[in-house]
Length: 382
Image 1 (cartoon, rainbow, N blue to C red):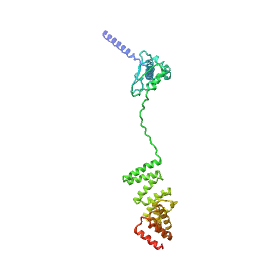
Image 2 (cartoon, helix red, strand yellow):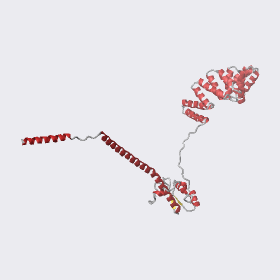
Image 3 (cartoon, one colour):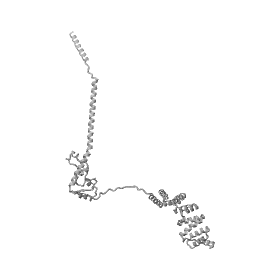
Image 4 (cartoon, rainbow, N blue to C red):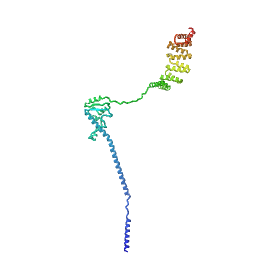
């Protein structure tokens, strides 16, 4: 029994322990505590990011400030070096050796150095105004005046003394700085006359080379630039006449006659083209319609006029032309003979007989012409 009771007691004890263990529960965290933890974590992350951004901005600003102040410090150092070097030059009586080099001045800003004991706060006190820097010296010589002589081709020894007049005289005695040669290309606009003459020369050169097509083109260009150019018009008309372009040549000459009514060559050329086409009447009209035609003292013109008039049986005009010819060449027997024929055909027999007689006394008649003149003298009763 005791053993059983002991076992029951042990069983009861175990059950009590198991019940006690079953009554124990794990602590469960509340939702409010979880939210608080998350909020604190986010706040810490935001603060860290803000701090990082702030540090980065400070770093960037420091770098920018260093980069902006470095050129100014270098400029101040260079100017201070130039001032110090200029002061030494002005106080020294030794000559300065100036040689030809590719630098822009004796004082080289890149090679200028500053004493190590020159503090940054002292540099900040240097005035950057060149006008005020130049006032610190009583002499008239400036750094620029000395530096401007570096382009001299030969070495010069220029002593600097305290006398400003002597210094100025030394600088004035320097030869002028050799200027670099420059090439300037400018286009000159030609006048119409100059352009026409230029093209006329090309046309003549083309004719010399037997290049008729190019010559015609050049003559046409001349007339486009200067329509009153007579030489180009006559040459072009002759070329067109040579290749039997009669209509084009006649039109070209008609334009020339309208521009220059008193030009005899235009009229003679046009009359010959008309005669080539057997247009005798148009040839005569071209010659006879010239203003003051009886005052045209030209043998070729009047002989062609006399011939065309006689072919058309316009004997009075023919007699006028032959009268001008005998006045121009009184020793020519053929002009006297022609005058006699014109007068004879116009029923002016007495004047015709005199002309025949004069023709026999002149030279240049053929045998048949002399026989004709004698025969007509006999027939006219002389």
